[in-house]
Length: 102
Image (cartoon, rainbow, N blue to C red; front, side):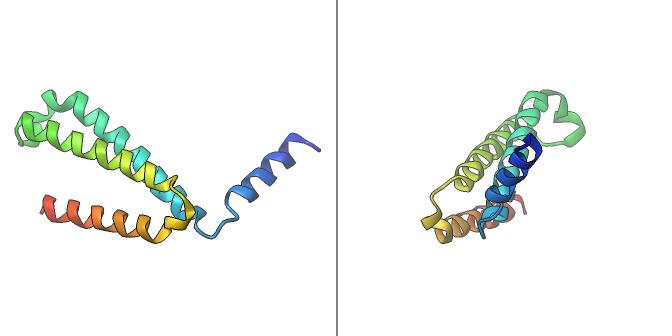
C-alpha cells in the first residue's frame, strides 16, 4: 500500500464522524484566536496610540482571548458523550464575549 493511500484512509477515518467538522472548526478557532491574542499581547505597547484603548485594557483583552482560545481547543478535544455540553458552553462563551464587547 502506498503512502498516499494510507494518508487518504487516515483522513477518511478522521473526518468520518458526524461531529468531526464541528470539532475541527472549534479547534481551529481556538488556535487562531490564541495566536492572534499572543501577537496582540506582544504588540500591546505599540498599539496603544493607534487603537485608542489603554495598555491595561489591551493586556486584559489579550489574556481573555488566550483563555478563550485554550478553552475552545480543549472543548474540541473533549469526550464525545459531552457534545451537547460542549456546544452549549461554546455558544455561551461567544454570546458573553459579544455582550462584553458591545
